[in-house]
Amino acid sequence: MSEPRLTLVSDKGKTDSRPTSVQRTWMERGLDQPGGKLPLFDGDGRKVDPRTIRRCIEEGWAEPWFSNPIKPDWLVCRLTDKGRIALAKR
Image (cartoon, rainbow, N blue to C red):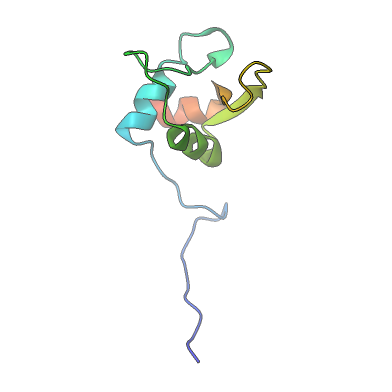
């Protein structure tokens, strides 16, 4: 029988992490948008990778804003205060 592994985390139950360059680029585009709306497409017109969006939601940097009835699989999100703080850190 093996012993359980221990994982060290912060007192909030999660390690503090920083956005990757891809996540940062996506979130920065919401800084100047009304309500912090985050784009569905990148600067070249390609759909933003859903993994990027989901990871930012998991970290609390972004949050789902509303459902799109025409495209229910699209994640329409906005930047959170925690996301703004993460962007301010370098």
